[in-house]
Image (tube, rainbow, N blue to C red; front, side, top):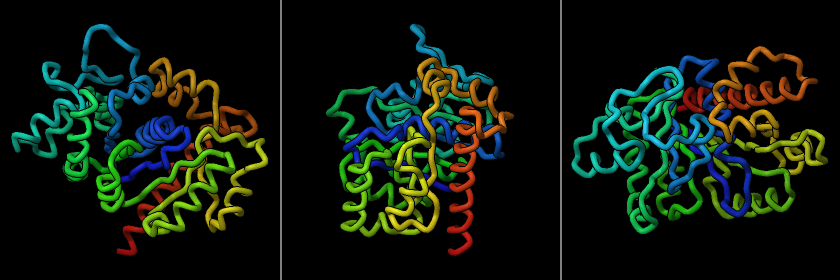
Amino acid sequence: MSVVTFWNSGKEQTGKTLAIAAISTYMAIEHNYRILVISTSRDDKVLENCFWKPKKTKKNLGLFGPNTNIAMEEGVDGLIKIMKSNKLAPENITNYTKIVFKDRLEILQSYKGNSEEYKEITNMYPDIINLANNYYDLVLVDLDSNINSYVVEKIIGASNLVVINLSQRLTCIDNFLEIREKNAMFKSKKTLLLVGRYDKYSKYSIKNISRYMNEKNIVSTIPYNTLFFEAAEEGKVPDLFLRLRKTVDEDDRNGFFIAEVGRTVENIIYRLQNLQAKR
């Protein structure tokens, strides 16, 4: 049971949430893990739009099966109410999630309340993550940059792996290098660098970025892919991955996309196993 937190500096769009959607979908299809993705944003539809088309009527339906309690309030909103009454057990978290793949991938949707309430409930995210880690094989946390620094440090400190999300812009890379120099937690071996919306034709290729940052390991990527970005707006990411999973020609742009997502997933799994072995 492991927690993988996805972080960025908050100063630039890095495709973090879409990267989580791609990684979690690939993992659920290709590996035998029970995965929960937790959105820590407020009223953010990016993750939801990857897996479900917007509906006027509220239905708690997943791609491959319905969730168990349609009457319950979904997502963090419902979960917080139960937590405040001290009645939440780890195995009951699934009652508040939406299912993508039954027994494989679930999403805990973002908080829908007002901004003042959101500031208060963010303090409860470390407890939510800890409870989830007692039930799911993998908990992937989409860490919002608006959460206060104390909670961010607490979540990162309790994570087994922290995925640092970057763009290919030199200013973004330099900004992170400055942050890393000032903050020891980003120098830890439990961090992994990931470039989202990656363009392999850019001068800032993963080899050049790795060299520039003095990284021994090649940086992971989620390439820009037109079909993926369209699917992420239409609730069709699972369908896309199922359709493209056998595409093996890396000279084909879709084959390259799937191969790089797969390489990133394997890097995450390998790093988790390696860190666990060293405990």
